[in-house]
Image: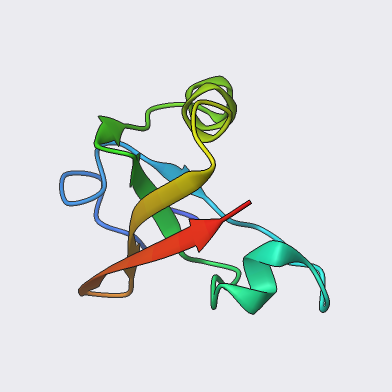
Length: 79
């Protein structure tokens, strides 16, 4: 999938690629967009969708580190 999206598989060795974001969803309001790669939630490295779901259910506040293109971002989302 990384190759299909034109991503360097070494740079993006872990994470979950966002394929779609609903227009009025919490992800959209948090500025996440299709193509972004979520790499960490609350300090946990994300290597699969199940790890993302597990990491996001732990707390009322999520600190998300993600990549968009060659840039890395961090944002905080409250449930």
